[in-house]
Image (cartoon, rainbow, N blue to C red; front, side, top):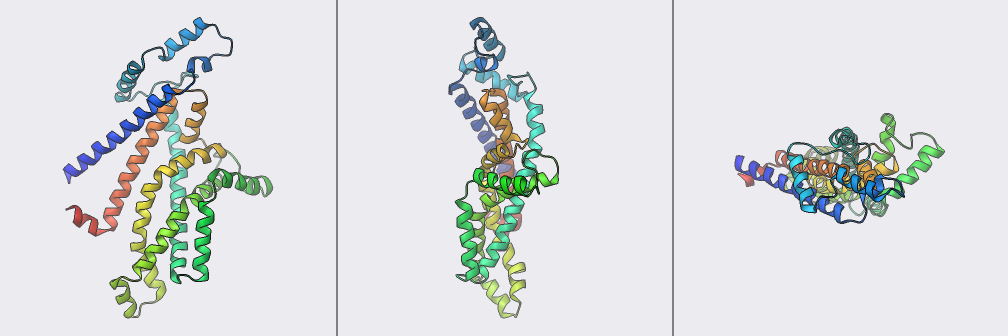
Length: 308
């Protein structure tokens, strides 16, 4: 068990280092000189050269990478190119907002999937089943940015039920969470539906039905646990999509999270801020996947037996 845990931790560190390294080199190979973006147009070349020296972008690429790794080991993510603010403080301040948004979206998407999947599997190929499958197809074909704008136009500008931008209170979560949950739920709904249908053919389900248990109890007690296993697995696989989708949603709703932080930094080529955001996103991704793996082992004894 200890060996397996050590291997998993080493694997997580390797993934984080690989993501950060790719981001480091891609940012510096891409077009755009941060020194020129920091200074106004028409700045003399002497000032541009001094700015490059101050930012550290005048050093060879490999030297910049070694310096970056040395600072990273000490927990120093550097300072922003604009304002010289500590990147670590800015990223850690934005992280809870993104985690809260993503966590609520996952819970909402899982709830939608379990309810609609169970209703669809109750009478396969019936009218309700076709309606649920129609919702899945429509939701999967709907871009997150379009859905977010439509929700803002209708519920914020027309009805004035919810705020359109910023995180001002509990009501601010409604529109961005709905946007993420709807775009995340289609594959979960179809997976839960198929899992419920397959569970009805299992021996334990038929035996429970033969003992005279009601359909509601069969679905909510016996089938629900088996149907929730693929949902947990898919949520782990969809975390990358959720983090990527959160960037778009945070930009639409001006949400003060990691995604908006990275997006704003991209425009000014603020390398330290982008690297800090990518680092925290990578850590969150691998840690959440590790937690999902542990939950799967707790819910399914067969995985524990196989691992032992």
